Amino acid sequence: MSIHPPEPFRIKMVEPIRLISAEERADALKKAGYNVFALPAEDVFIDLLTDSGTGSMSQNQWAAMMTGDESYAGARSYFRLADAMKQIFGFEYFVPTHQGRAAENILTGLLVKPGLSIPSNMHFDTTEGNIRARGGRPVNLVADIAFDPTAQHPFKGNMDINKLRKFIREVGAENIPFGSITITNNAGGGQPVSLENIRAVSAVYREHKIPFFIDACRFAENSYFIKLREPGYENKSVAEIAREIFSLADGAWMSAKKDALVNMGGFLAVRDPELYQQICNELIMREGFVTYGGLSGRDLDALAVGLWEGMDEAYLAYRLGQTAYLMEGLHAVGVPTIEPAGGHAVYVDSGRLLPHIPHGEFPGQALSAALYLEGGIRGVEIGSVMFAYPDPDSGEMIYPKLELVRLAIPRRMYTQSHMDYVIETLGSLAKKATALRGYRITYAARFMRHFTARFEPL
Ligand code: F0G
Image 1 (cartoon, rainbow, N blue to C red):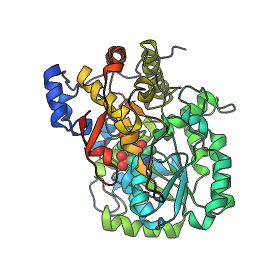
Image 2: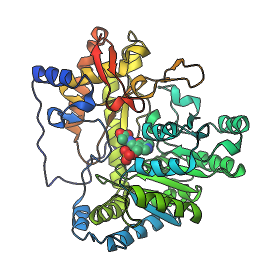
Image 3: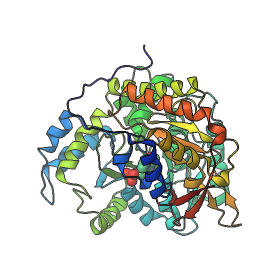
């Protein structure tokens, strides 16, 4: 099989993009406080900032949108979504939310109290932010191999079961309102978690009567990795694998902007009727009535179709092939990345590419700024800007182990020649890596500072 199966679709609507001049890029970046989040998208040529809500919808999704029922309560669109939810995830209850963090807000608002801890393999930024904002402690218990960027392992997103057991013993199950796992592990390279590991995590949480929630943004990519890499699953469909994953959990939340191929949407699903009731009350206060969450009827329909399309195996083979193609191309031009390639993104190891820039001068920030200046490409720093924080006890700054720039690939959007352009651009940057300098923060918010921080070059 070819490593990069061609797109299993053809393009029938196009959106123009343009590369502005080097001087215009320098000017735009300066105006943005050197933070690529503050750039107008029009000034970006290839936008790999995120795979969230940025993909192309299919003709069937657009057609489904035309059937959207905008009734306030009990819309037909809701029941079509409920049907897909039941078949794919199998939870007794769910509510739509406008995106993933809205579900996190409701869940953490109900369950997290000051001083309580929430373990996961690794929490992503919005989950961390929501937990910390309620005085809780997000704890990452991913297996150590996740921090060895070149170690070859099929499931580098796995949780370390011994760390989990030890952690529960130390803090006490009564101080853990729920436990979690993120599939795939976005903060750690988009690496998958094996079914064996999810089963073991579930067993430990159940043993201690800790409710187990899955952060399910990229469940389809994770399920396809299981099909490709985990013995015993090669003949199972992605839908069957997904069903097995969710059967092990007490609930899940999802930013549907990822594997459900919609531009906006999410959900929170549970089995416990009492918790569901509380969720409904919160939802009504903050998001909308229980049959629409923060979404339009047409969004619910696009989601109901997108959930199935995201599990299409020809699409998933092309998708994972595309990230692998990008990673291999980058290696060929001397750009180090986390290996293997993630499902939705390639993570450039800016710590290794720019060893002369210390954590406190933000190597990932330096690389993401340089990438924009060099070729109008936008990636996102996943390193000390995003994750460094002062220890709550000692006040000492704790830096993340890896300094990364994530190149997230929007779904069904960019072609192989776009990827070739990204490879060439990073290749020329790698040649002048020693000339790149770090940055200093001039403004930072208390939580999730990477979105709005401003910088000055050193
Ligand atoms: N959990 C994970 C693992 C995520 O990757 C994200 C979003 C969320 C939760 C929150 O979902 O954006 O719909 O509110 N990740 C995006 C990204 C933003 O770029 O990786 P949301």
